[in-house]
Image (cartoon, rainbow, N blue to C red; front, side):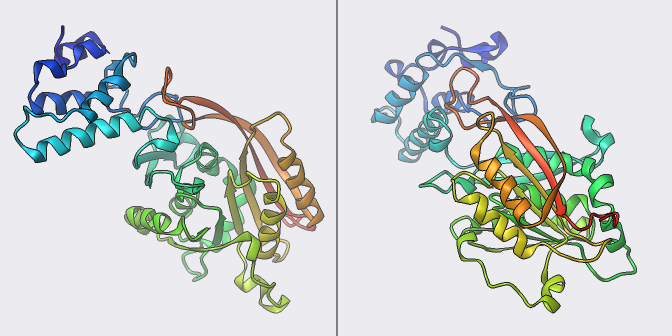
Amino acid sequence: MHSPLETIERDSLHVLDLPQLYTKPSAESLLSALSLLTIYPTSWDTGSNDESTTQASINEDGIPSYLTRIISSPLQWVESDSLKEDIWEAASKRLSERSGRTAMPSVSRTFRIPRSLEGENGQDALEIKLYEPSLTGDNLGHKTWVASYLLAKRLPQLHERHLACLHQLQDPTKLDFPRVLELGAGTGLLGLAFSALFPRSLVHLTDLPAILPNLQHNITTNASTIRQAGSRVTAGVLDWSALPPPLPVRDRDREAYEIVLAADSIYSPEHPRLLVDAIALFLRLGGATESGKVIMELPLREKKPPEHEEFRAQMEEKKLKLLEEGTEFGYDDWTDAKGERGRKEVSCWWSVWGWARADCYGEP
């Protein structure tokens, strides 16, 4: 039998390499082994683990049973009750990490977003740190979805073609901030990235009441990054099924938003209509050079999702036109952590929309 330290050198960790309970291993030995069994959050760029450069690969055969035995053991030879609790807690975490994303404990992730087209190689990237609580009930907004990550990385590419009008509002001699609204912000990755990429932006992140506390927590965590850009980020509750009444025309553009963002925000048949109603309510009408833009990304869970077709129809009915679209691939971690530990390739559709009567360049 090999020790855990010897196992790392062999680049593969097997259940027989771990301290066995019948040998009454020390608390320190058990805690060290449990640390080696940690499954880190996946990196969506490669589908591998964020810590993959330092973590030995793990042969999962027998590992869940090993962890279950530790949890059920009274650990009578460990004299310290505090150390017993630490061992049971660590074993429980390692077991939940192997039970799929819905059973995983809370995780913290750091996302690297390129600041420019030249930053795609990672040399010039900002970091957004997010906390994701354990998923409970149907609070899917507590997970960061790959569509938001892909769209955040695409923002620099969309700047010249669709966001150049923001330059007028970024003039340091002017007091106005570009107003940006994110619908269904979840953990806030997309809106937080926008605030850092586009200086002096005013970004308002919205979601349901149960999601708001964690959203506010992530804003606080990234406060220094937001300040460095001279931007401001706020969060609030917005239920698409209970939208406020439309503002009078004379007040509309003063209260509306130049940019509306949304990512992976459709997962039920009624969402296309509700989402488009919210977009039409809050998107700036403006003049020929200040027309609002909608920037979206949705996962393609099937070849032609009916919800996507309904979304297109609803947008056109509201007199919004498709300016540009495309598809791209990324990785998500929704599946069970077996084999490739939750790696799942996801195809996503991104799109940019504007009012049909004018675009950012003033062309009808």
